[in-house]
Image (cartoon, rainbow, N blue to C red; front, side, top):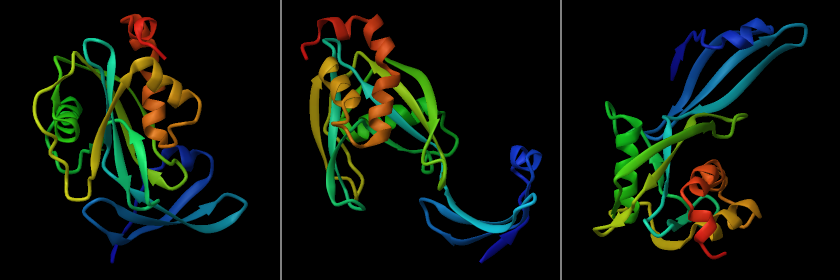
Length: 202
């Protein structure tokens, strides 16, 4: 069991959260579980458990005619198929830029390439229980040029649809995989500026 002192919570320290010690009771190739013993000013001590993961990227891939290449993927923890955007972690791509990882994930999960990969922004994933950023990219002029190359746990089917239809699913709660829904919504203004929402049938 790894045990060490961590002083990486400056805002917490400012408001009275004092990290007394930190240890990692479990580590896997995908994540590590962290436990902090914390003293909260005037309230007492708690043990706060959460997991730390490498940053992830998500790609909203758009073809020249305004079609978004969504995927349907089987998710073992919930035993359901989810409508998603191509996405993946950076843990296996040390030294690569986020842009480069986005190109890799697009190719692996859809077999597609693009001429332009625009960074859109990022959000935090599960802020109460996970330390991880999810970086969103908009891929333009996407062309499917090869077969997808999914990893062992990935069972994926392509599900292309007009941009307006994809945004409608995200906005109306019909895309319950939250990272994908939010990523699409973050790209909405850029999609509209390029005319994809004006010309795509619902």
